[in-house]
Length: 276
Image (cartoon, rainbow, N blue to C red):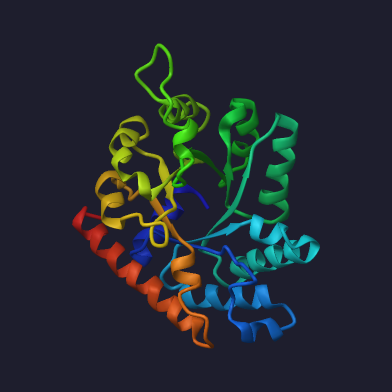
């Protein structure tokens, strides 16, 4: 999915919601555990329920890799299900890869070719040659970690750089934006760091931002839109636990749909208020 298609999907659905499929088998409704494939069954019902309100799905690969071969099969089946039944959805592999060039090339092949994801999250610590292989495929995206929503973000990401007015994450933005374009590169910026969005937009005014941390982590959607939205929207706001684990009864998917719709309606209002 390219930049134009993503913007069109946001405009059509009046939403910039990304639903995170961080599926923990210990948290899914107990009745589903009797199914032949409980994780995939859970994902399928969440995808069906939330797809009218979401433009993207983000699958955190750790929740699948932790169960070995079966978990990887669940991941592949979930991605294939989205591609088959909701082909206009933007699919993110939240894998946080990034290694020397030839290794990154294989990661890109795995997630872009074998699994047909649209994007993958990438740790940029190793520099340009570790990121470039993810930028070589048309219609595919690297989503670089910039300023994350966890408490430990302050350990390194906000450290000052000697001889520069920028802190580390701002330097990452300034340097890495030269490696790609707004058409193939996004950035992860946590919703809990909304006060930093203004400076971030000064550095990367046109790129999309993937924003985790709204909902269970306490990020504020209105603040994110106020400081982070650009003329094309430029935001994918992720919500995982607050949607997919909002209920653990047999109506869990209906409740998930209600939660997703609540966010979509709020997003529609915000889009209108910013002239989109």
